[in-house]
Image 1 (cartoon, rainbow, N blue to C red):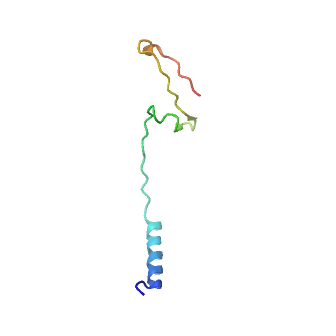
Image 2 (tube, rainbow, N blue to C red):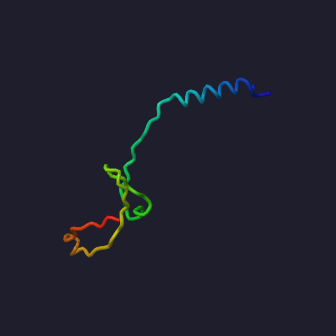
Image 3 (cartoon, one colour):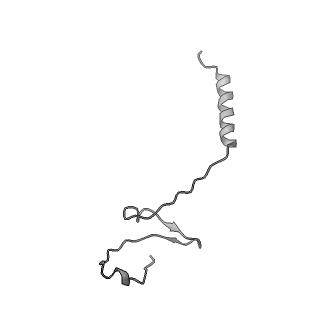
Length: 72
């Protein structure tokens, strides 16, 4: 035999224990909304309110007069 089953099992268990005991590194990923991913994600604000963004086409001349945002 090329592999000793007992040595394989012992080294496998030691490897699993080392992986379990190693610290987990969490990485924060900042996701900015784009036109392509607006309908794929829901966002949560600091008050635990969920929302989803909706894209609306507006005329450039009237874009500076937008004062109301519709929350769906």
